[in-house]
Length: 320
Image (cartoon, rainbow, N blue to C red; front, side):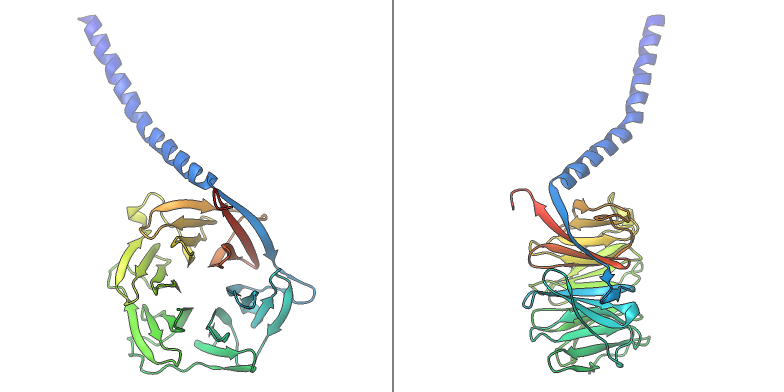
């Protein structure tokens, strides 16, 4: 009898020990999978731009765009109230300042090479024609009134030159023609939705928008209908802590800068985590406060990180 009791006791201890180790084993397995995914990605730092004696230093840059035609990088240097350009090797070229532009924060370029810039200081979108040296306010027509005043947030542009502007206080995205005429609005009817903080459009017209406070990413089709949503903290192991910006590459992968994690997290369109880039820190290749991301056709990743811009080149196995 005593031997049976001892055997039962040993089995009970073994089961208890197994159940205690199970969460640890699962965590180690998850870590191994993530580490393996990260290990499949090679990323090198192409350039770090902070400024020089000629152009001075960046002061709170908040938006950028790489012109694939002219091979130039344009940066909205918000704190200095200017638009700064760099050549294909990221050397300083010139800057644009204007009395009609106070606090440029986001910029996009149309097919004709003209820019639309969000001026947060004046709470309006500015149209800029660099060749003809035109800087003027971009008028909107036919936009339905919201409950609150229209305060534009970040903007995006599609291949048809339509603009997608975040209406921050009314928690919607306004879509307008190149003339400024209203097309439609995109909104979310959910209790836990706090408002859009970033927006991008892919080649097919799909719209990608982010709610930083809720830690959620929404994907809409070209008609503004929700296709999928992911990233909510209560539904994910690899949750977004405080996403600040997103970009979509040619393969449909979604790159998200997570400011609190100090990393770039990559997901597919279904919201399945793929891998992470960089790590928290202030050294070269590390991210301390990532706020904006852009990907060009050569798969270079541009990240605004505090008062510097880091440019990474992603090299996947088998792709050279």
